[in-house]
Image (cartoon, rainbow, N blue to C red):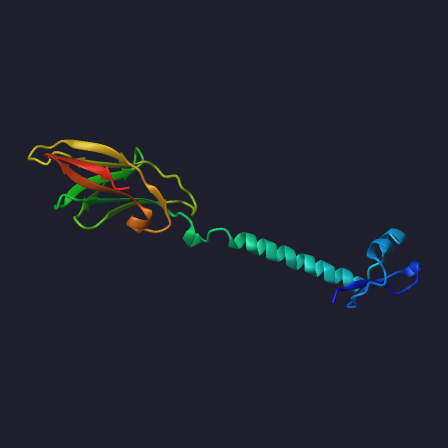
Length: 180
């Protein structure tokens, strides 16, 4: 059934009621033109305010529920280094120009993770990651310093979230190549 508006009192003190009669007895437009101000009972006003508050609450909730949760936000700068040489490769790395050098090893068949934890979730800026290693695969030593890129990551899974590199042999020279 279609709700209709019905005048219950004389025009001097008119109230608006909703009924379920399919035939409107009074046209709303006529009611509003003839009586531009219609008093509304306090209970209807409270009901309308509650509906407005509920609607705004649901709108706010739906807005915030579409934002990424803490676990979905980027929390790290992640770089992963492996080796396709068949042997372990020792190297050093640091974050930024003045960070301390850390020693690590790239093992065949696994990723060595280098990460920078962001101060707050959702960031995506980190200091430059620099790797230092001996690129001479003979008895000589030739230290090379190479900057590597990182990806902003939600987790520490190298294949899914990290910027991946591998060591390769090129003649007797050790090189780092991006895998993506």
